[in-house]
Image 1 (cartoon, rainbow, N blue to C red):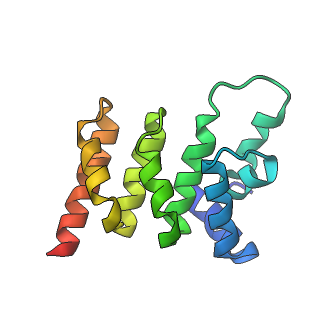
Image 2: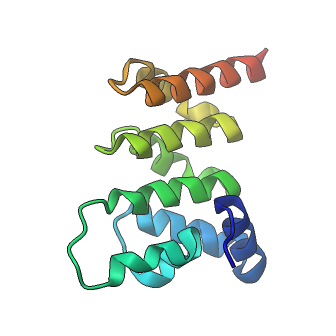
Length: 139
């Protein structure tokens, strides 16, 4: 069964609990990588990374972790999200800005504002949306 990313996270939250899924996301962001963690947030799409071959696109682990935070948020993940603004992979920075926008993570406001100068247009756009949402929420 193919699930959307949101459905995958929501299913895992129902099956194991939101706290467990949040813990998996944070573990991936810390660099822990095993099939169970990856399947938790990415589904079977993660299987290709355990085929014994060398993979250079493992930044997707962190993208999936951030995407998981879109649907299993807790304020305890704030520092991890702010830390992701400095990730070398632009997709991780973009997703971190989306998390800030979705959950109105006010503590991340100054850091996400700096991403408006990111060299990648999609990151800049996500940062602009996040800043606009934060400002709107304060009004």
